[in-house]
Image 1: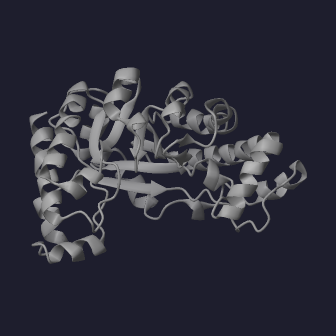
Image 2: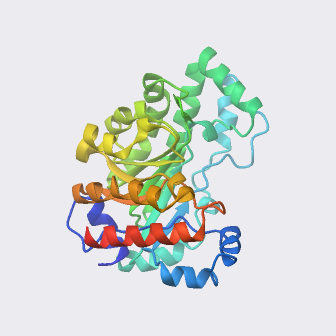
Length: 325
């Protein structure tokens, strides 16, 4: 099977030759740190531990040109709208013409980031803007709702034009919405203001038969899972998790086949030792593979503090588990 066939089959709970493995990318500082631990170079690493082919693209959904003054009243929303032109082809990712020519012949998995999530959409890049957005949520939720609706409609029109040219295998919504204690919005507010604004995008994805719609979040978003399923998401990809509330075994028991899963392996185990790695992998991965709808992956990017020996053990153990599964 090709990487693409394998991915689509797993996410549809169908039989595969093996589950896919997607490496998040070993950056150059990690490779340099591992050279003193026995690694000859990046090519040797890729040859020793191959991964399924995956390409990540994103549409530029930021206001263009940049906004100097974010709206604080409904009267200022028209200016916000003028910075969101869905007909601007410069917002498309580079290389889209190659993907268009490949069409159905493409063997690799293509994932497209279609939305930046609530806080980035609202322009949160520093503490000052974060504070301002939280005040708006309290004092002017209607304004925030309309801003998100404008962004959602813009993203839908931009995405619709792109999908007329390029087929994708998964749509990804990035949503850094809270911390280890939970999200910074209640499920009710999140549904009303954020998930409602995603519906034009969901309609376009459905029209173009995109079946895997990924909620990529960080830390502890447990209480939002019922909401995202209700509003059309199919798959959870949780990153940088430090809360037992996001344990994938528990989530699978609660939501069954309604919730596909990507990731779920605690990266901290790779920093510790072989016993911790073995426990982390074997208590979760084989069972989830057997149930289907799951792609094993560490919940964060491997960094320099992960010993090369530990990484090798992790990859070899994971390879044994996935091959046998």
